[in-house]
Length: 193
Image 1 (cartoon, rainbow, N blue to C red):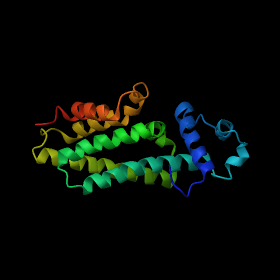
Image 2: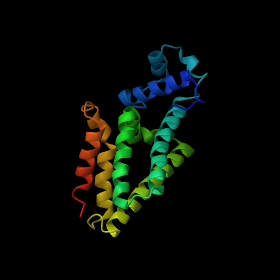
Image 3: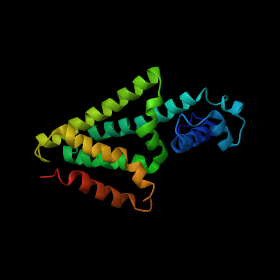
Image 4: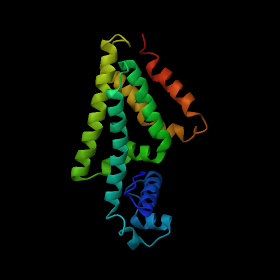
């Protein structure tokens, strides 16, 4: 959320909202809760953001953008498909470590999006997931990993990565380098030829 166009107060509002949405849930968090946590009057929030829904939209589209941007870079690289899978695991790990509360919103609170925001978010998510499947299938076709049902492999890998944030909260003392190596071995070890 380090966008220079976003005011410092708006950044503070979004960061506080992320923490509260994770702690209390989107539905259980009020504008009064957010204002109180920041130390301002609820009416002052509206000088920076129009609604609680707008906060959720901005947060989730930002989060989805981190993954889509990372995927674009990985797809454009000269790496083989197995190396791209390893980079995708690293991408998830880095995004999770740097944005743990945001990952909780991505995993759970996206269901509260409305209308076009929901459609935009689902389109970004589907695009990312489809690219992930293509890379996974490409690794199988290239003989870099064992042939198996792509959907089962995809589900197993992505589910672990999606919920990694909840495990990481209790193990944040581990180094990101060690975590990445362990996750690569765990998630890809059985697939490697």
